[in-house]
Length: 181
Image (tube, rainbow, N blue to C red):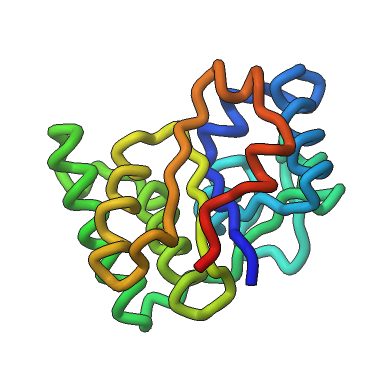
């Protein structure tokens, strides 16, 4: 099995549009490593796509290049009936709220979808490990805290997608990934 790379909206926003050097650097790194970036449907919606459309990209999606070229894909719908997925999403909302001092109801659903998707990929056996690439530090820390508590110790890694990271990212960042068990 492989490492799955789950990515949030902020990474694409921070990269700028397809003509921006950071976007092109990320594109080259991912394609050279032969991996794909997976976005939850809620993130796809935040990027301007229609998360319920049969095909993507759709609408006014400024980052459609990645989807069209196949190095960015939209994940299957989250299985909320899976108690692991729904529990880590609820707990993730609480962790993010506590860390940011915001009300739980004010936490973006896309933030908790990152944690839920990581849990679902690991639980379903679709990935041996997950790297969460995000600009949202509280969501990243929530994933690294909650998933090991559910038996996925050593199988989740959070990487903060800072400006510096995106200006220097190489294929090596994706070839190593999180350690496969």
